[in-house]
View 1 (cartoon, rainbow, N blue to C red):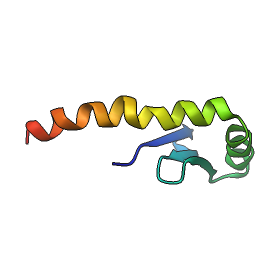
View 2 (view 1 turned 45 degrees about the horizontal axis):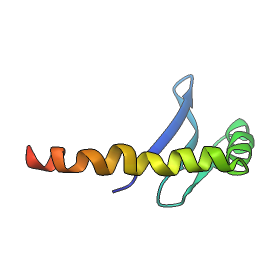
View 3 (view 1 turned 90 degrees about the vertical axis):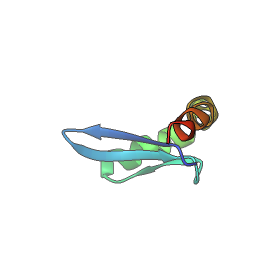
View 4 (view 1 turned 60 degrees about the vertical axis):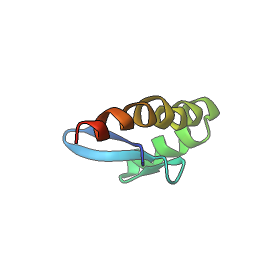
Length: 67
């Protein structure tokens, strides 16, 4: 299971957090600046890292039981 949090503006993805990397990655110049800021903020990384456990792992049993 991988948790992905993408940030868009005007239908263009400029930053993404993936639980497999454990950090933000920027795709545009603005996204690179924001990703650097978010990666240096421990509370932001902790929040996104716990989202996998809170959302994905909690619901995986429900999703697979319906298949």
